[in-house]
Length: 99
Image (cartoon, rainbow, N blue to C red; front, side, top):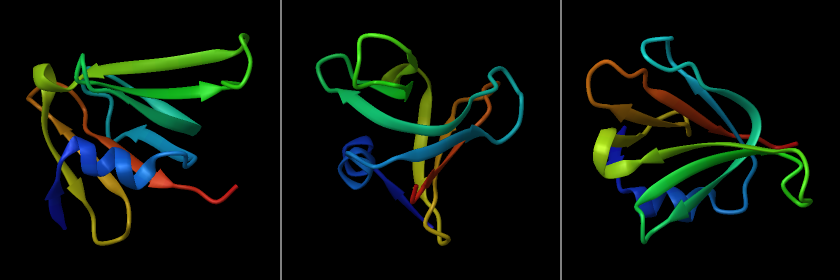
């Protein structure tokens, strides 16, 4: 396991379909079985986007203001990634999926 930056995470997972789930329900319970990530550098915001994002209908997303709540991002030995938040918010585990 090693710590990575938000830009490294985005470069690794850009254009990939992922699963993103909260590790517990402390403060937030996130669960996307098929999503992709978007990073908006000017706002330092990471978004998990799910649904039919190739059309104007069916889009759903959750955005995280990285500077406000992200403690660190860990590349796990099993190939997954964990976004760890400051206290009182559940970590998010991200797994790249082959669909």
